[in-house]
Image (cartoon, rainbow, N blue to C red; front, side, top):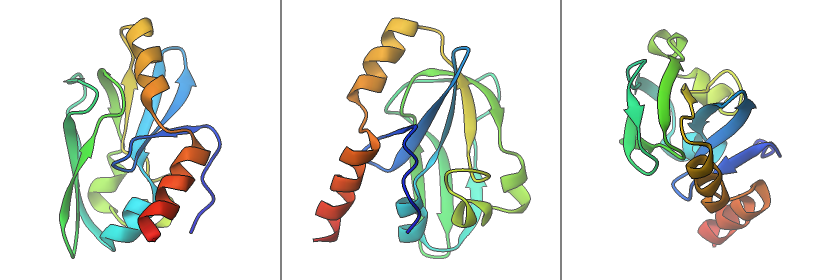
Length: 135
């Protein structure tokens, strides 16, 4: 299992968000999530320019075992999607916290964003959640 990067915040449903600065964030799924899914074969990403609300399903990852919705950890407008995943969805399996990112968002409400971030799990809490799941 990969180390959990210290600069990420997590949803209990295993999505992560990294604050990039300038009101931008990057979103992906955790190493644990990709491990549970197995080899990914398809990724459906949101449209650039699409407005996404925190907690709503906004993307889909499919493996040979199952399809799984990806939920937005925070609200914002899609700035970019990782189009390389269309040809190589297994990148998520190989590097969930790096090259396997899914999309970036522009945050449009700083106060709401701070509240949403505060509701997410920090890396230690997320590690604890994973331990509890394993038992």
